[in-house]
Image (cartoon, rainbow, N blue to C red; front, side, top):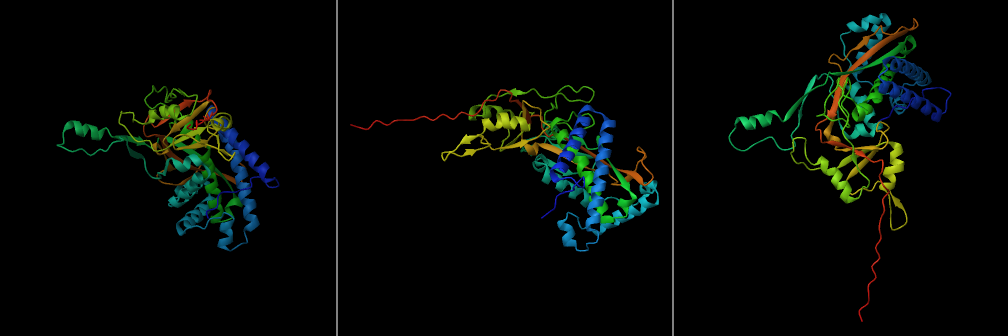
Length: 402
């Protein structure tokens, strides 16, 4: 079984306290992202990375003498491939020699390292596990099919058919958004060796991506970040920001009202019909407890309660990135998120931060983009006045025949 990251960020704290402190860091970083405050983001992220480094060092000191790969694997320490070991070993040697030596390295980060991080992200974040989320390391553009109907046509080829075929694809640049993860590496960290550097690097990459991905997928404005599910792709873009979709009022989730709501997904933005097999509903945790849970919970004949009962196949996902009073509903496979390392895949030295002499600062750059494949693939519902489910029981008394 694959081990998830399970670092105790603060030695001496109980697991609950460590988790609470980690959540506080996440809240501060989220606030900085929402405010667009790069200095605040950098400072909080700097503090967080320093704690991660110290956690890895403490963890390594506890098991550094263990030479059993099976035991190390149960502790979450990944066994490296030959390419990964070669990359980290040469990186360590360059870092120990001089900061800017890293920029001249002729080795690149193996794609297996990035894939490992993506697997952890999918395991920890439910939304990432069900959307079209891909590692696009090395790619700069992708072509996306925007037609729901088949593109093949019977009959002679003519200009109208050619035009239809050409209009069925959208060119998406992946390099328009950049996310930089800074790594603060001390000599103590370098002395631990390749497997622990890998653990540290993957944790940094994981946190850097985790902080921004879900926010970008749901709320992203499109300005230097992904275009979120709540955004209108055909709306007027002002200074790079896409407008929000108008919320559709819904007061009940019975078959008639819910079916009417989902009918907005049954045609592409070009008017082509499509089958909606299943949907996701993303809601704020508070709204789930106060609105969605009462509206989707029924009592079975044996007296027990059954949750998340809807008249159409729906997966309910709780996310703090959704505003209270709103719900985002759509088809998970119709949102594309592609991210990965820049084409050369190198760790670079950065002099943007100054530290004590035994610390050096490095950075990994990610490029990527995310957006709905179709503007009608997601809708925003106003659930502020959603009513609890009321199940009527009609008693029919049969009159015996005389």
